[in-house]
Structures are given as C-alpha cells and as structure tokens.
Image (cartoon, rainbow, N blue to C red; front, side, top):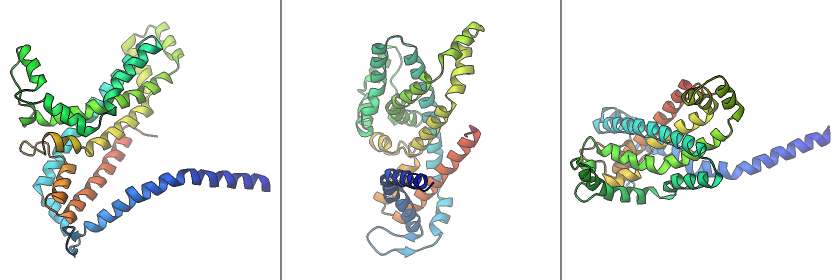
Amino acid sequence: MKKKRKHIKRETLISYLMIAPEMILMLIFIFIPIVYAFYISLYDWNALGTKTFVGIANYLRMIKDSTFKNSLVVTGKYAVIYVLAVYVLSLAAAVFVNSIKGNKRQQMCRIAIYLPNTVSTIVAATLWTFLFNSRNGYINKILEELGIGRQLFLGSRTQALICVAIVGIWIVFGYNMIIFLSALKDVPSEYYEAAKIDGANAVQRFFRITLPSIKGTTIFVLITSLVASFQAFDQVRVMTSGGPGKTTQVTVYYIFELAFEQYRFGYASTIAVTLSLIIMLVTVIQMKLLKFK
C-alpha cells in the first residue's frame, strides 16, 4: 500500500510539473493582465501622469457611450457573419476532402485549403485591400468582365464589414477544416454502410450520422470562432480603420483608439473588462444552447 501511495504521489507530482509551465504563462499573460485591467478601470489615467481614482464612474460613462454601443452592434454583426461562414465552409471543405479517394489527392487538397492559415492577418489584410480596391482592384475588374458594375467594397457602409470578415474567414476556415476532418475520420464506416443498406441517401446520412457524430467538434469550433470574432482587430486596422462612418469599428478597435490615440487608458480598460465579461457570458449561453456536456 505504501509503494502504491508513493507511486500515485509521484505520478501526481509529475502531472503538476508537466502543466506548470503552461499555468505560469497563463498566470503572467492572461490572469494578471485581467486583474490589472480591472484595477486600471477604476481610475482616470493617461499612462503618463498620476492615477485619479474615480470608482465606477468609467462604467457609468460606458453605459451612456453611444460609440461603445455602436461598436457592440458592429461586433455582433461581424460575429454572425464570421461564425456562420467559418462553420459552414470548414465543414463543407472537410466533407469534400474526406470524400476524395487517394491519400495523395487528399493531402494536396488539405495543403491547398490550409495554406491561408500560414499567412499573418496583417499580410492577408493588405493583400485583400488591394483586391477590394474600388478603382484598380482585381475583383472589380472581374466584375466588369462579367457585366457587373464596380463596387465600392471597403468604401461602402453596407459592404465594408463583409469585406473585413472575408479576410478572417479566408485565414481560419482551413484550420477548422483540419479539425472537422479529424473528427470525420473517427466516425465508424459501419454506420454509413448500415445506413446505405437501409436506403438512406447522402443528405440523410449527413444529418443523421455525420452531424450527431461530430457534435463535440462542432461545439469546439463554434465557441472558438465566436471568441475569435469578438477579438477581431488587425484586419480592421489595416483595411478600414473603423470606417466608413464607424461601420467597421468593432469593440476591440474602439478600445485601441481610446488607449493609444486618445490616451484614456482607464476608460479603455473599463470597456476591455466589459468585453471580456460579454465573451464569457455569450460562450456560456452558447454552450447551454448546444447542450454541452
């Protein structure tokens, strides 16, 4: 019994040592900054002078801030476009690649679809900015060849947010495709064979076998995509700077403007803390709706 207890204690110690580096990094780069951001949110501070304690004044100001409310609406629109598109495209790509016969062909398709994920958001945003250029952009030239008129794209109040979302979708859907593909390969082939014998067509097999079998992966992709959508910043900064008319001013970009352009670090921290709470709340609701277990 003593040897067994020593063995268990040793394994437990090894387990803690294995996760210790990651926990330390999370403490330094996640938990401590969150606590410090909440602390700063209670002050009026421009990062240079002395801090002036204002209590919950910043939070009361935030409630009346129409720009903040607009940024939440914009972020919500972006999240809907981004999450739905990433989910549908990545799952469709995974089903398509999984249906390809031959390992070499599958591998080439996986590489081609995953390749955009290796490009940094800044580079991708710069590339797509040229493509969406209203005067000399290649997309407008293609539209002209097809007999469709030129589009304003990034200069349009209705099209700009969609254009910004396309960049994020283009980068990440290949990564999620790999995740879905791994889940699809774990679905036993016997299920599909039995369904074929029972006369189920491809659509029925997809909705009755494939989707229920990859529920855990679906929840993971939806939650991570939702969190990523609330953190969108790089492509907004490069492509539109929040314009035109604040139609692409997501909340993270508004925080950036407050902190690094207006030097209102206290108020920026207030919105950052609030956004973190909103993300947590929305994630919990999403998990409940999807019946996460």
